[in-house]
Each structure stands twice: as structure tokens, then as C-alpha cells.
Image (tube, rainbow, N blue to C red; front, top):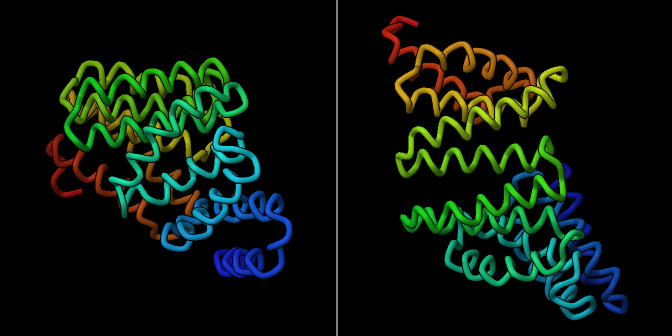
Length: 254
């Protein structure tokens, strides 16, 4: 498996690149990024810790490569060690902002993580601010229709919903969906578009409009099945949301 190959490569870094810390740091972060993309947080933490330590020593803590490694480490710790992830994020945000524009994508991610940590503590206004800043940075440095801009808008919508700001939730979700359809509608199926549409449907349901959400969720389910090709967790989430919307419209049999 790809994860096994990456893990073996991580072990070889320790045995074969001891005399070349620059290459070891660069390859360690590449391997960490690969493992992170495969959704394997248990295997990514230790290689990333080693790679980040090397990168800080060789390049400095504000170098774009070090920033990327630290952002990936936060992602790997969010679920299992949230307190450490929150501490690293609070240190990472100013460093990532100082490295703009080279660190734009990582600054957007760091701000999103900061918002997530604050929302988990029930801090509504404090969680909105970094997401709004992340949207502005993404629009400026990545583009209004960039994948990360669309996802960040969707996350802002979700955060409004978490704190029952229903009107703002729907307005933001509609804006994200409009941009996503303009950028990606001709290239269905698209995971970014499917994700944004699912969030828009959730906002519609939260605003007592389940009937409007049903056709969106039917399309989301179709696209998600095509994208994943098997019974994944994302497919099940789409099924669950469609079922909830149908029940709210009185379609109990389906």
C-alpha cells in the first residue's frame, strides 16, 4: 500500500540521510504530506515531528517548508491531542502570516484550525474572526474560486450554524455554492463541489427548507458514489443527510 511505502521511506531517512539534514527535512515533510493525504494520522505524527525539528534547525521556524510541516503536524494532532494542536496553531498563525505570500495556503489552514479549536471551546465570536481572515487571505493570494477559498467559506457557514446564526449560515453557504458551481460545475463530479453543496443543503435544512435541500442531496449522493466507487463514510454521510431531509418533508417511506 502507498502508506506502507511512505512509512518505509520514513525509516530510510533515519538510516540513510543522517549526514544530510536538509534533504532529510525536505523528504520527511513530503512523506508526512503523503501520509496525511491518505488519512493516516497515527502513522504521520512521528515522521512529521522529526521532519519539523530538522526543518526548524536547518531552515528556521518561519521558512515556508517549516511552516508547511508544522501545519501538517497540527492536522495530525487535531483529533488525538487537541491541546497540543491548539498550542502549535497559536504559535503557527503569526509565523505563517509573516511569510506571506509564500505561506498563504498554510496561513489559511492555520487560521481555520485556530477557529476550529476556539469553536470547540464554545467561543463564537473568537472562532468567526480567524475564519473571516482566512477567507480574505485565500481570496487575495489564492483566488476567489480556489478550492481552499471555497472550503474556507463553507467552514465559516458551518461555524455560524454551530452557534445558531442561521441567516448568516445560509448566506455564506449560498455564496460558497455559487462560486463552486461557477468554477467546478462543468467538471462534475468534484469533491470540493460535492462538499460545498452538502454544507449548503445542511444550511437549508437548518433554515427550515428541507424540500429545497432534497434535490441537492440527491445530486451529492450520486456524485459521491461516483467519486468514491464504494461504500465510504462520505457516502454514508450523504445517505444520512438525504434521509433526514426526506423525513423532514414527510417522505417517511423513502
